[in-house]
Image (cartoon, rainbow, N blue to C red; front, side, top):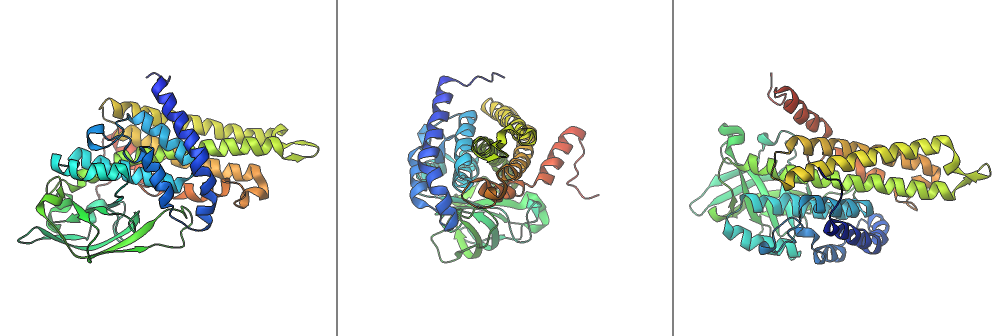
Amino acid sequence: MDFDLTDEQELIRATAREFTDNEVVERSRENARNHRFDLELVAKIAAQGYLGAIIPAQYGGAGLDYVSYGLIVEEIGRGDSAIRTVISVQTSLVCSAILKWGTEEQKLHYLPKLCSGEWLGCFGLTEPESGSDAASLRTRATRTDSGWVLNGSKMWISMGNHARLALIFAQTDPTQGHRGLACFLVDTDQPGFQPQEIEHKMGLHASDTASIALEDVEVSDSEMLGEIGEGFKVAMSALDSGRYSVAAGCVGICQGCVDESVRYAQEREQFGRPIASFQLVQAMIADMAVKTDASRMLVWRAGFLKDRGRPNTLETSIAKLHATEAALECANAAIQVHGGAGYVDDHPVERYFRDARVTTLYEGTSQIQKLIIGRAKTGINAFVPG
């Protein structure tokens, strides 16, 4: 693997960094304070081409490679994880699933609208009683003369209140387990699709998170993504892409913690000298720097494999596990470097800490990543009950 970025990748990275500094950072604190989902900023993100970065140009995307996509997500994640979530959900979960599993007609109909930001999408997998065990979905899809009717509920759905398109995973035959799952492309503009905002979150205050009730939601046969029984595969392939973007965003959090800690430590004086001269402060910054570089290299490795079409589920899980845990550890250390100043939102490190916490939960918890890694190394599936 060549660790030198191409000239194009360097330009993409620099452009994303400049955009983040000029557009994202200046809005992040007020958006978090006001719990505001910033649609104006989402439109600017779309105009940059970031909502369809890895989607081919023929479908309205930017046609970038995964390493370039990771660079973009890292920079946006450094600025604000809430707006990074928009990119991750729209691009990695929704668009990548349609690109991989959709018919040509579905791709041409949905992808240009999603890549341009005309439509937002959401990924309806998690339910109140089904998180890590995706095969135990209770949402039901019932056959009708004209297609399907969906009934059930979804939980913790990013952008669920603003999405025009929802990927809804449902069980067509409970006796079949994961082989009965199907994924449906649901138009949210109908009475039976009822989202409700989830409030009082620990972090991601500027992100839209919803619970969704599905009451006799009608979909046609042409709105099924893939075939009956392929829903589980659709979800897992989308999560492979989603975990990559979450990991890349967490590298941004790590880098932000390093940058902010170095800046503060150089300016803050105690005992007549900058605290950057204290050995224990330098040790904390050094630990953050090591975690940041290690996380970035793991993300780049996963992106390298994705760009070559090689198996990467293991490497993506390793990157996701390491980068999310590192982000939480770096944010904790960054607050320690800042002392009391880090406990309030005058500095972004307190937001880094709150926003990083959920990354070890969604797109597969850290424990699920360890089971994926353990299965790959031992050949034994710990997901199957003994």
